[in-house]
Amino acid sequence: MSRAPIELVRAQLIARVTELADQLAPDLARVEGYRRWSLNPVRADSAPDSFVIDVSGPTTGRWYEFAGAFGGDLLDLIGYVKIAPGDAQAYKTRETRGEAIAWARAFLGLEDLSPDFRARLDREAQAAQERRARQEHESRQRREAQIKRARDRWFKLGRIIGTPAERYLERARQIALGEIGSPLNALRFCPDRIAPETGEIFDAMQAAMTNAKGEVRAIHTTFLAEDGAGKADMERAKRVFGQPRGAMIRLSRGASGLSEAEAVKRGRMAEVLAVSEGIEDALCWSMIQPAHRTAAAYSLDNIAHIPLPDCVRQIIVLADNDPKGSAASGALARVVERLRARAGDRAVLIQRPPEHFKDLNDWWRSM
Image (cartoon, rainbow, N blue to C red):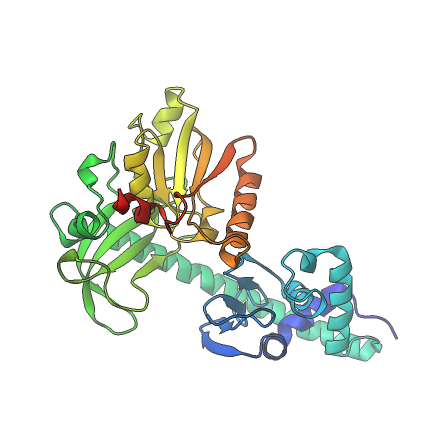
């Protein structure tokens, strides 16, 4: 008899991921494709859009807490739920990992293995690995197809000037595109965007999300009310179609007016990039600090993955005024920490609006 090695423990956890998820996160909200959404089991949680476990597909066994911007594998999940409940730091320690492995062996019944049982489990693990490889290939093909559809759609869209999308920015957000220096052609208009949930057709402001090479990877969509009076009255008025991770909406080139590559060629290596979650905050910053390059990342988590142009020496994260100690405040701190790890010797700063204002656009509209 022998103790199950860690590789076998991981493989068997993945094979029984649905059973494990049901035990560790029982407050199921829904299953969409390969993702299982639930309430966070170790904190007061009323929003079933923040805690997800991948129960099939190429990322089987990965989980993520969007409200706190952290996650990991199934052993991390056991550590987070069972060993160090709700502690966003302690669940990753070596001590917690050891206890999580012991818990997993007991859950799987793998404390002691006979040679025959070990051989059967090895065969099952090999078959599961082959399935995941096929699923990963299929998932990669789907992602590439999504990117192609987003890119093809982008080049068919019309300009934003004179459309309900421009009126939305001017009237609802008090943002005049004509006052932004060196604006990029990142915003366009679509008169017939279909809302996936209802099939209704809306006007929409569309924004290109581009990677480090400037290639369109996704389209950010803001569904609009009639004549651009505001956002559409729907549960999710902002959506992304495509693959936004590692891409951003480049909104302004700042004082130089140069592309990132041209700025490097001309020796401009000390520029500032200001990045926000939303388009509106980034556009406001373009008017407050026209010398800065500005961009929007769509989500807080994606700020940690944005392209970092060689011409930029300082990154300013345009943040909301979330209460100190809140989940959102903690998530911001972790995202900035990850961004700093990527940025090397480049400075990463946080810029919030004055006290009592929710975000930069809220402040801008009060002036």
